[in-house]
Length: 449
Image (cartoon, rainbow, N blue to C red; front, side):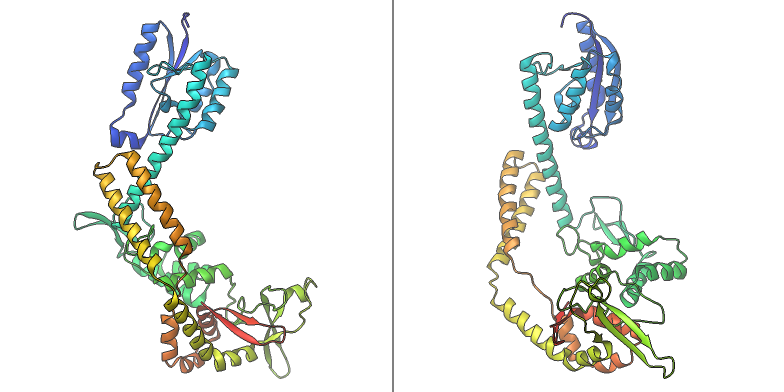
């Protein structure tokens, strides 16, 4: 190109590059300005995106430049990775430029000039390499962050309700917030008893004078951080819940039970399923106005509403409750014995190797953070370890904790149950059972949480 060109100069640097390498946009803009002066080109404008990654097009000044192509002949930048590190989006932008007769030039890379066939080839090749390096860098950063989390260190200033960031022994950690802790604990306790997010919201907002929304409570109850675990570290912070309590909350939330206040409380809604079609049986209620007789029962809605099932019988709630009280201890004892037998027969070789691999990854992350290993060697070794870890974890048998069931068997739970309200009885069965299984002849068996 011998004639003077209208040039749009583009410069970019991400927050991570500024922090880790000290990159600046001023060095880029100085080089672009000097290049235009030496070549006799007109620098129409400098478009600068500071604090943005090259992994996508969501950069304000880049988008502004692409909307001003009719006033440009060339877009110039210092190196291609300043412009884009995404093959798909780089080609989208290149198509826009070609339609408007605008070329791309990298002033520090002589082989990047889209006005020639060789330049186009090198453009495609180097964008692909830049995208690969971006992804590899993200993987390395993620691994380093995982190592910090493993050590209990905070990697973000934001915390969920009930927690705060504090320096403990010279390290920033996430600890319980004394001002928020009573509200968080009360919210968990209320939900465990009443099994309603809406009820929890109304009651807690009234009790603590808050105006927090339904979504706040929904996120609170679903966030696994309250078990103290985070990104593979089971002891990342102080817990509000045990893992068993958290799992129970998720089970209750997934059932989406609507709690009716003071009337028509069904003990086994979402626990009893049709033995033919497998759909949940709906709770029904009848009352004899003359004799005051109350009758709760469960029936298949696909049969009675949609006419799509042949199971016409119904489950009498009183009969189901009586069967449970007579048989639940026997079923629990058998379940505990079966779980113990399976776990005792499962070899722990894989579990030991999983622990060893995680320790090796932690050591590798530490060595990389200290600069004692190259990025290439780090990527290769980490990929091998993570591949083996994923394979072993997929093969490892799931372990079930029966401690809560054993404690229930050892206690005087039957007398306590008889004194419960219907709401608390419902909560008791939902905390104990995953489902009540029936065959077409109404023979029952149980699946425990």
